[in-house]
Length: 200
Image (cartoon, rainbow, N blue to C red; front, side, top):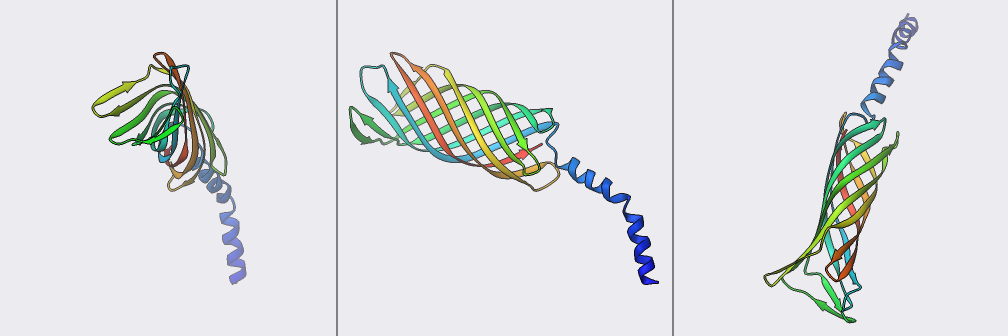
C-alpha cells in the first residue's frame, strides 16, 4: 500500500515539475530593467606625450561605476555608464626622476553608452563602454584639468544570484583614454578588480 501511494504521489507531481523548472529559469534570465554598481580598486597611470617635458604619473586608485539601462534581447543589455577613478598622492616621473607627491589628487571621470552580454546559465558577463572622459589633478591649491577625450572600458565578471533579480559578484576591468591636454596628449590606463551588484 505504501509503494502504491508513493507511485500515485510521484505521478501527480510529474506534470508540475517542468512548469517549476521553467519558473526557475524565468527568474534567472537577464531581461527588463538593468542596474549595476562597480566598486573596487587597482592601478592607474597617465603619460603625457608631445609636450615640452617627459612626464608620467601613477599609483593606486579607487574606482566606482554606475550603470543604468535595459535588455534589448535576452541576456543582452544596453546601458549608460557613469564611472569615476580617484587616486591620492601618486608617484610622478619627471625627466626620468621619480618623485612622491603630497596633498595631491588625480581623478578621471567619464560617461557614455555600453553593452553587456551574459553567458548563461553560468552568469558570466562581458561588458564594454565607450566614454567621454576628463582628468583632473589638484595640489597645493592649484587645479589642472585636461580637455574632454574619448575612452573605453572593458570588464569581465562573474555573479551569483542572491534573489530573483539581484546578483552579487566580482569583475576584472580595464579603462583606457586619450585626453588632449593643451600642448600635449595624455594617455591613461586603469586596471583593477571590483565587487559588483546587479539588478536585472
